Length: 225
Figure (cartoon, rainbow, N blue to C red):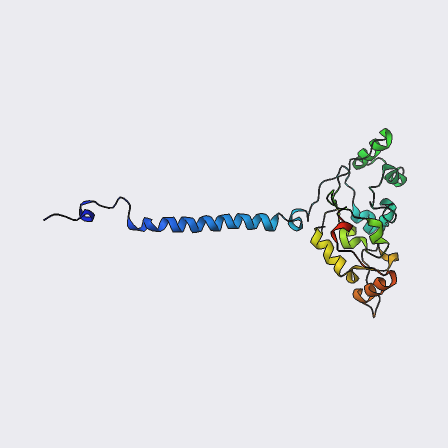
């Protein structure tokens, strides 16, 4: 009696290996999808820049200066009310105090060197818009956008970090509904400002919107010039 081909030729691979191609394909799709999702989710400005906290050449403590000592933001960032940039304080501003206060501190050696040579302290910029984006500090603070809205509670930070994404979507959220983020202009640098009894941030913000006729633009050309 002759045997059938299946009886005379044993399988090279066991039957369960037939499941490998669909399993491998499904696993590849899941892995690639996970990689794409990770880049899409964590590669956005919201997750790429928030938390940025580089070490500075001088360990300047905002918690001490702006918090405990109560220095107004405008003492160091003097151009914030009249320029599109807030400006990094020059060495002269630092030496206005430290020519006599802690003048021999080793932490201030870069400041003293800058004062002697005329070369600026190489501060590392933390909050920065892309080169293709125009942002004017003066237009915002002159209408009641407090420093804390973009920079967070720097008066509690030993070393400043970025707390907001500064992305286009984040900016548009404010432009579409500015009232909750506005305060009286005289309180723009008060990090702990709260509305008076009987008022809310929204109610005060709506009054400011009417007072200054605030209509934040949402068209592309206002920021992408």
